[in-house]
Length: 175
Length: 155
Image 1 (cartoon, rainbow over the protein chains, first blue to last red):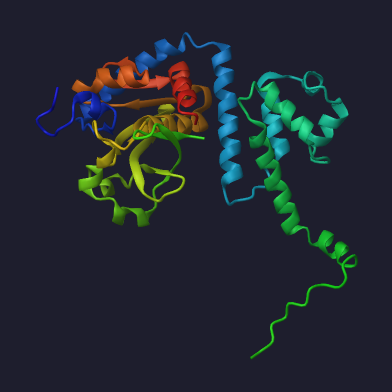
Image 2 (tube, chains in turn blue, orange):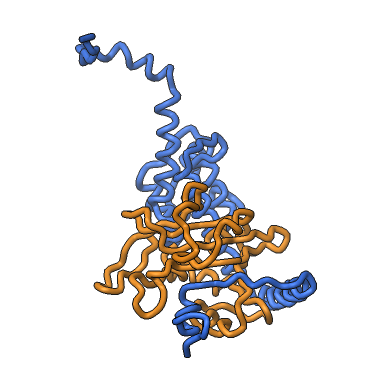
């Protein structure tokens, strides 16, 4: 079926456009009440598993957006994301450490930012989430942290200075 | 990685959905994108493009209803070359809708909802095409229907 307005069928339109539908304030209010009621009924059937699924997805998207952003935030560390991940489904860290075959003390060092996780741990995190949060998402958050450390740790840079000799002479001559 | 389908060859092409910048408006004409998108500046407007190109294949305007933990798709359009039986790329609108689902999950977690207010004659098509649920005048996705879109479009 073709519409008179244009040369597209209704199915083709639905595949490519959502029109702005302007309602009167009264119509809008009534439509919003209808929607809220439908959602309320739907939510009565939502299981704990569905809630967990959504929360894990939320964490993944927040991690991915943060890793992509230009901003470094001291509070958004690998450890802080891992802490949130653990809290989604565990009351105590020990149980989680056990589930990914990590010593509790090692997990504690990672969570307290005294040790960085190795690749084994990152891959186990992916496996633990059933790949809902891929290893690469964890890795990118970690990389961002390491990148910031590399750029901002002047004491470390100064300490390395004495180990370097025969530096390239790249001073430009004036012509 | 999200992707659209190049219909001529069936080849998937990687895409990105990102916030529209002010400088984009000069390239967004009504003849190509169907609406006056400048009118959507009060909302969050996103563009979909191929990773390898700056050309905008689709646009979407979102309104966040924080008190209802819901994102409303106010307006969405594929570029004119990507509409109808001769379109170049497929799955543009679906990717944009799935991206709206991602934004909703990010903001509202387990309470996330994406809704739209369809033209009456198009409602049944959105329901069958995107698995949307009927709420009278509005249609929406949340929970499983929303997760399904995120999964299907590899968001």
